[in-house]
Length: 218
Image 1 (tube, rainbow, N blue to C red):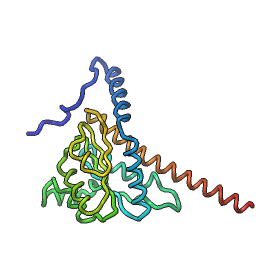
Image 2: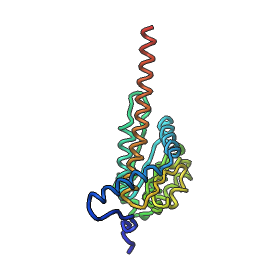
Image 3: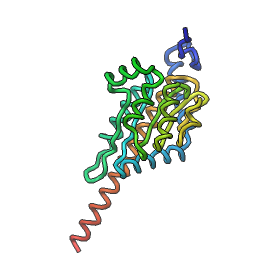
């Protein structure tokens, strides 16, 4: 039986909850600062370009990363919506339980994502793959399938990055050794992407409205 991955976690000060919280907060801040800002901007550009061209963004993950994938789809689609601008069309490949479990049952759990990508993926689409270890076989297989189909790939990883970090076009690696810290950092990455895109869209809309008002008043 495989060991529970929580045993890989870096441990913090156990003398009290306050001490543990302080250590955890310090570790989370340090982890966030290891993320490559240029890579994050490259990920943003891929998402925006896909939306502008009418392509889809697919998100995948296991366990806590599956929940992040679902949340990411909510925030990237609804949270960035600005009237008159392209919808960021996101789909989580973890959320259709009937399809997910049918593929797992018939083809094997390692193919739950790659099979969906084969069914749905098209050139110009983006796959956003989330794996704290960077080593989940179904995630790595999905990235390979996406690249074969001409999709762009973004990977969120932790620990040493695993195979995921080097398999994707854009790697967003969190240099930390605790699943909670890594998943929290991945959540933050998702929020930063969505909020930055939304703020830029809001600013562009405000600027366009101001220019129009000046032209009408002239």
